Length: 120
Image 1 (tube, rainbow, N blue to C red):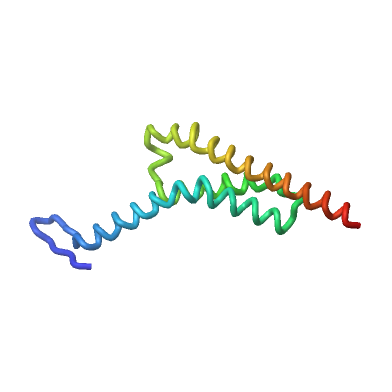
Image 2: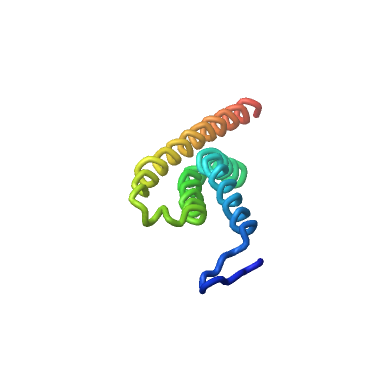
């Protein structure tokens, strides 16, 4: 990192600032995919294959992951006035998506159980 001082003002290397801005843009671009698809799908699949009896917990896991990731990527979400949009719209929407994936997983589980009972 190249640091120059002029009249008491420290200026950082523009390449470093550009790299940080690029990383923030990439994280923000992937935020929607992670929060609304990857986290819900991963939590449902994990619970489906590990322990189907506790499949109901997957929306809670998904929402917790989404909140933690959002706070890590957008730390200002706790302080800015627009944070109410996150808490009032994004979280309920994410929960609805996770619950819908869970309902589909319960239906598939029911079909598999019904098929297994028929084959006995």
